[in-house]
Image (cartoon, rainbow, N blue to C red; front, side):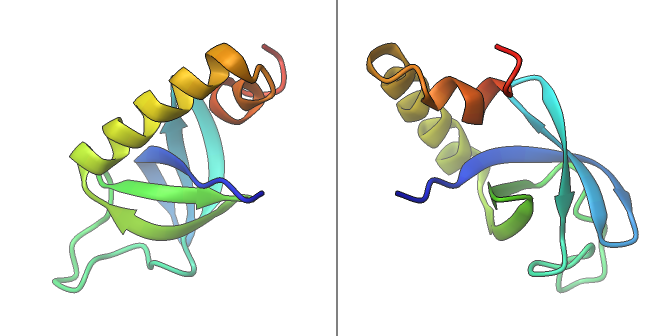
Length: 90
């Protein structure tokens, strides 16, 4: 099963970004979505769907929060989801 995790872009350096996922900063490659939007504006603050270190798509904040809530509910019955949300150290 493949799961994309929503995160918010907090910093960009070239096509590499720091993305906040549940308080954990992750290194994410923006090559597939670009570091700027169609108007040439930085993607800092935007939400992305992350899978295996790549931002797969841009999503809106409502969709991101709904997906995070669903994943947190999954975590209650499937603890392995916690590594996706909170990192391996949890």
